[in-house]
Length: 192
Image (cartoon, rainbow, N blue to C red; front, side, top):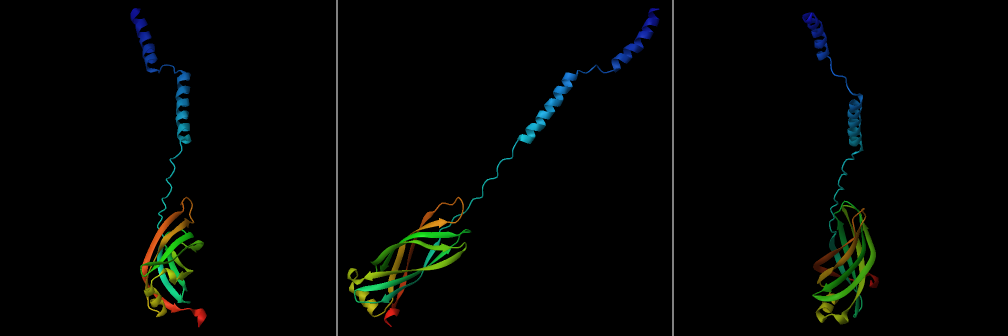
């Protein structure tokens, strides 16, 4: 009988071993909640901001187109200076102020300043003129003779300018210029 009982009991034991243990519903819910939290954390995470592009700023280039000494009177003479300014930047600039000194034959002729001079579009150039008066009392006799006989005169034009870029986040800056060469002497057109 013991053998019979064992024979009947063994199949139930085999069936009981093959079936999985009952699962606890709390554990499954915790796993589901953990998965949902991970997914939410991935959605909330923001991408890193892209770096702002770097704007390269180059100084405008000054070039003397002409300095003409307009022969006037024996003591005072008018000077006309034409300057070309190249803007190598990819944005417009404003030449908001300029301070300059003009030398002739190594001596100071005149100095001056101006405000709100010029607007220069991106990658282009513009010209502007300055007129001022030179007093021969402050110069040597050779310069006066060169002007009277209308010979070319050595000049040097130097100074600095305040440049205001027309671009966001680019501050204004100062630039220096220094040009020299020969100046043509022309008669004053008013006296003709």
